[in-house]
Length: 400
Ligand SMILES: Cc1cc2nc3c(=O)[nH]c(=O)nc-3n(C[C@H](O)[C@H](O)[C@H](O)COP(=O)(O)O)c2cc1C
Picture 1 (tube, rainbow, N blue to C red):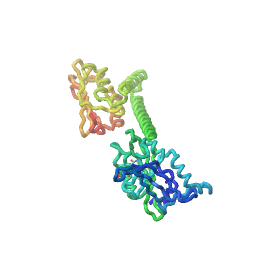
Picture 2 (picture 1 turned 90 degrees about the vertical axis):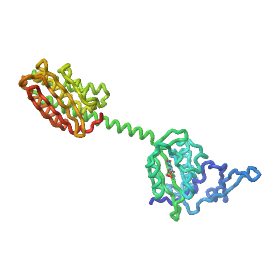
Picture 3 (picture 1 turned 120 degrees about the vertical axis):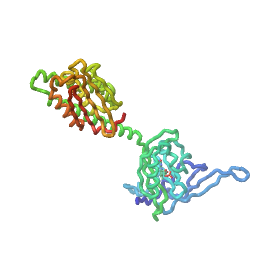
Picture 4 (picture 1 turned 135 degrees about the horizontal axis):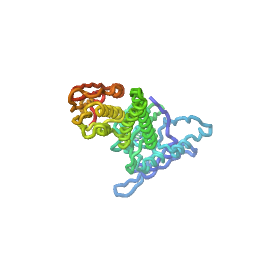
């Protein structure tokens, strides 16, 4: 248990103004020596039976067996004047400070400095005699309050960040430090607390955290795009340099059109259907149809998927169902607890498929599904055309 066996004898010199029902406070000096203070006379305005105003005076004695913390560093002169200097420091520091009486019912404030009044916006008579919970409000965390309660109950040092309210209703984040003050017999007599307004600091920290998240996201996305470009360059058919350059360009263009769509929409998740239409319609026109729930996906998923749609559409136009006038393509998708499944269904061919499929495109689609999207791909070719099923189990329970 943390103990501060000391007193507030000197600090009592700067007791804030007056408490509720207390009109005046003065110090009784029963000795002419500068530092010996025997008590405080508290004058309270009251009324007698004949409704006449009377002043009631009460002498409050300082706690005898309470002696202040020794300064961490002091000269002899500094030590001799320590009580007055401590009182001046208490009042002048820019750190808000309060002291509460742990022996009195509900732990009321007995001292508060100017910085505390400035921070909270209350006047001296509005804080003295009250429990500090008047600073809490509707959005103050009950967990933080419970943490303080537990710390006080165990008479230990407690550090908590808690949302507090000023007199005008505005809020501030209070980095609160509370420590118990015991007398020489180890009896708890006061609590000391300092309050630091960390509202601005928290804003800066939140901004820094979101900047860091953004940078990590940018890095993740660029790595993802570069991996896709690398796979395009690696698996495209390089036997004919001219054809190679053309096919790489088209694939990179497909990727870039998905990038532009995300950029236009502020990098929010966008509907799968929008990307399917963007890539398939230029190659298949009105002969392509799209159907599926309004699933929104991130760039990390839709960039590789866009490339797959581009490949499938190019194949359909060059070698598949769209080589005949009656040929059509249906792109459908469904999502359930098992993940997202995309169906590419060509139909309209009569008899065996015409040309052979571009093997390099196939390799690229397979690699993209398996490596980038951790999915599985299944192809089925019949006389009416090609059917491709892409299962992406990692995209289970997608938000609509
Ligand atoms: C010295 C001292 C200073 C305190 N200062 C604050 C404060 O600045 N803000 C606050 O929300 N609570 C403060 N508290 C905590 C409340 O006074 C109270 O102890 C807390 O709400 C838990 O008790 P309760 O459950 O009875 O409300 C302080 C407590 C002590 C002892």
